Image (cartoon, rainbow, N blue to C red):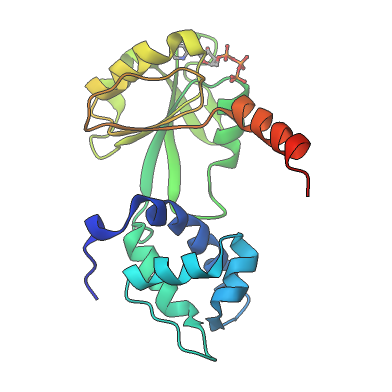
Length: 211
Ligand code: ATP
């Protein structure tokens, strides 16, 4: 079935990797079908939302049967480009960047950090988690034109300048782990993950909305 991806709402699209990861685990354990209630409990999204999300891709659960796990998986694999390896670069091999290089998403999907960048001469040329660290000034020289996603784990003060360099080098998506709000052209997408803000929000919710 051909899906017009522009018709999938962004909120639904954001939940796809979550569904995908859970379904992969289900499939690995040999399960062939799943109900929206089971999915709902596992991924903590209410079942009406799951049914609506799935209806966008023509996956209609049958009463008393649920959804076919393999059908959903093959759909998600295609939609999330999981059939192909998505190559990503990382800028800033400090504590956080080092942790990502060791983790390198190998357990859950087909995204791989293939190159890292820094400006610290002591780090250039070394490997972390099997990934070589290059100097940021060589970005355009060494990066493969098919790489369009970058993870940024640099100090906040350096973030905007690096974002400009990344855009210049053809990067279209930035996962920004710095607290800086980045100014980028409209066609570039920034997803911002500020761990300290997330943690503060969690503490606030626990305090003010217990239970
Ligand atoms: P973190 O836990 O955030 O990684 P850290 O204390 O290990 O923190 P930071 O000072 O935040 O290190 O720097 C992260 C990495 O970013 C370091 O490896 C640093 O050399 C690198 N870095 C700093 N400025 C730049 C820059 N302009 N371009 C690329 N990398 C940079």
